[in-house]
Length: 137
Image (tube, rainbow, N blue to C red; front, top):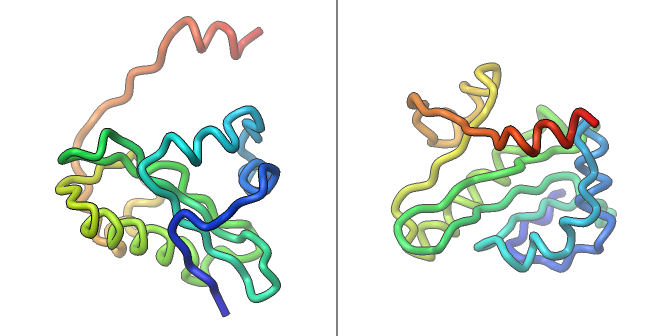
């Protein structure tokens, strides 16, 4: 039923449309550049080839990677698609000899990430105040 791929071909509009489907900013200008700059990405497609899941790992590719933007279209949530994305990305991290993968997530998603093998830990986030000012305008 699902086609799970690493670095599969993605049309420029597909990820922005998926982002929009979950209420996130489209960020059209990020694609396809993000797909080239990240270490690797995972796509999950329905049998009809519709992109229903996406996520990526970024970083320098030495010891550490950062898991970002795990997105599942609302019509396909709670069907194991997100878990397919995260677990496939972590399998790829093993193949690429990345020893540590970190991510941030809302506390309501803690059990999901734990089920995928990610151990919750304390951390922090810094946001550029200049960027926040620009977003408010």
